[in-house]
Image 1 (spheres, rainbow, N blue to C red):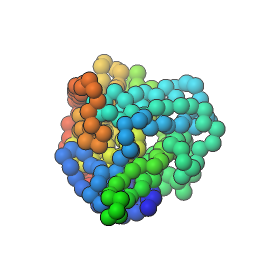
Image 2 (cartoon, rainbow, N blue to C red; image 1 turned 90 degrees about the vertical axis):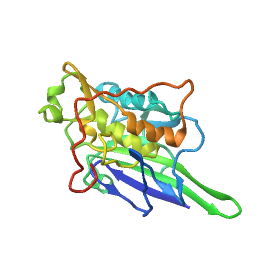
Image 3 (cartoon, one colour; image 1 turned 45 degrees about the vertical axis):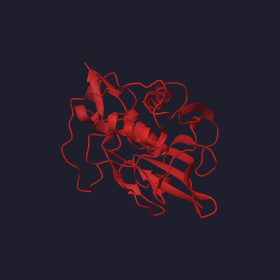
Length: 243
């Protein structure tokens, strides 16, 4: 059976209801008590839309977001290619693009879809595997990929949502992480998940989301340490219990 999920940046939209147990400081998706993940340890290929990510700052911002996951302590890796001439949902390819189509975006600043298969037969055993993931950003949102001036970003009094934190969040869904609302976590309120050096902001995965990736895919070898320092702290979840 192949099932589709869509995960909004502002809420969870489940197209097929499934339990999402809470584990430690990260959330995973489950099928028959098996965590849903990509099979094996081969990198997951992402294709960026040609129109959405031409050479320049947006392409660089997306590459930086992919690099953050690839620098985490887990074995999970994305590879990223550009100039995909045609992007669409459920076409057998993992793709990233910008859109104005609210039928896809559902009012969210960004959304991640993924398709997965679930096996539960006595003769074959059980299993749950990712098949495809697509990440779509809302063209109508005032994103900024420029991390060199923190004063333009939301948490520092500016008008822009940081593009990289949003991308890291959605790519986290793409590898199998759900929303998290009881820790300071990029899988929660991503736009404040930053640390700064002077005026330069730096988006990052963080310890808790990295632990979730390690739970799904194991530790890389040789092992690396993940050190996260922030001047923000967790206060309380919002009224929706989402962030």
